[in-house]
Image (cartoon, rainbow, N blue to C red):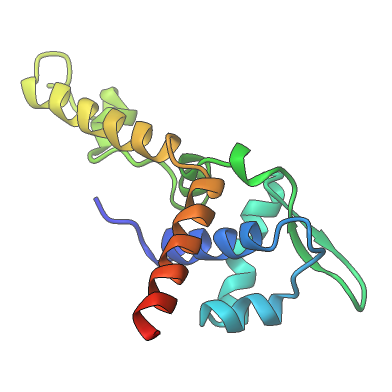
Amino acid sequence: MKISTRGRYGTRAMLDLANHFGQGPISLKDLASRQEISAKYLEQLLIPLRTAGIIKSIRGAKGGYVLSREPGSVCLDEIILILEGSMAPVECVDNPESCHRSCTCVTHEVWCAIGDKVTQMLRDITLRDLVTRDQHKAEQAQTALA
């Protein structure tokens, strides 16, 4: 199970929006530049997040993107599910009918447990948590430079 660039870049963009929460819209250009992501690719990632209602787009000269909810109410599992789909490690976790052995398969239980743990871990981390971690890392970097 791997998280693709969709999930990784999308999470970085969401963290950027969380870091600027309450400061007004962030332009796609600024977001892409800060995150070193192609604006065209980033725009493709923001569409499903906007459709899901996690972010809003604001039109106009001073427009851009903002979080539609407080960063503490947006969990990583929600972001990853929107951008990546299920985090189940194998097909039969989400679709037991895909394997005729899923009812009797001992490893099916293991795969389900792994999927549950990953989902729970992502559910336990909010954008607010990432903002705090980001600020801590920035402080550590400043201390190291001093």
